[in-house]
Length: 432
Image (tube, rainbow, N blue to C red; front, side, top):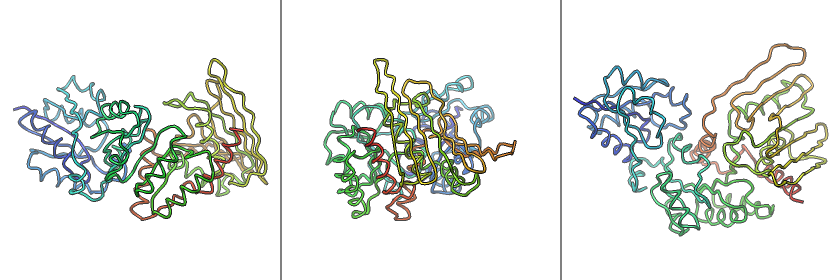
């Protein structure tokens, strides 16, 4: 008798889940399904799971295809299960290609391609909580978005749009989406959320069209360098009860929220100074000087507010080796901030808040942080605060969007319109 095992969360059970189980069953005579526990989902960064463990187990059982159900509770359990249950074949999705090759020493490992062409109607019939997601792009790189959404329950990536049909096709095939195209009207049909990642000059028109169609939008920041256009989009989104979110992942991270709370709570006293350094060394994907500036300026704005009395900048343009450098100085009524940003330049990546009673330190890729240090004056002990952080962090932005939709809240308080407007004004100073 050949034994097969597969694993999953199986939240909001739908046709795609059924197909995975059915295809796994075809590889043997006896099928075991591992359903992830709540604690393991949290540990591995799986967010917004709707159904309880018992409900998810019951839904798997109802397929009538499963011979045995177990609970996956910790990282590394697959090895133990394969040995304990004498498994012949492990079946997992193609989005995990290569991740479980080390288990081939114990059994056969099969990576199943994602089931395509499951209609959104089929999915919604199973649960109205699942929202269709589309991507507007001008290149075939997803910046980690597709892989991140699989960790957020309630999202189904449906299709991709590009003005260049070849780019759309390449993206669709690369990330195993249902469909692609270069017809915008057809693309927007039955979508709930759209992620826009394209050149700056195209963003305004795409955002406006999506909002007018009632589609919620996540877009790279800024939406436009024209402040009036940005205000117009925010106003239109409010009128249409549509969420318009800046893709600044940092502000949605739990560690960053706690960092801001400690800075505001007088734990290190009155904030006197902020010192920021960043280079492109720690970024997985290519970043321009402007991209990095957005993160640094956002941090200063969240910490000290929008009312800077004086802002100066020094920009050394790029040379033939691609080296660029920019420094900025902010003077507030009772605090200052200094930013250094370099591209292909060796800078110390850090964000340090200096207060009258101590300091808070975020190091390395501080914009994607899962921890920070609090150091009190005269105290040798360093207080380290750690928080769960997985992937690129985009999943936490999606989680916040789903919470807002659940609560019928259409204005995001993680980054207010006034803060976004202030950040844009500073960015425009860099362009001058």
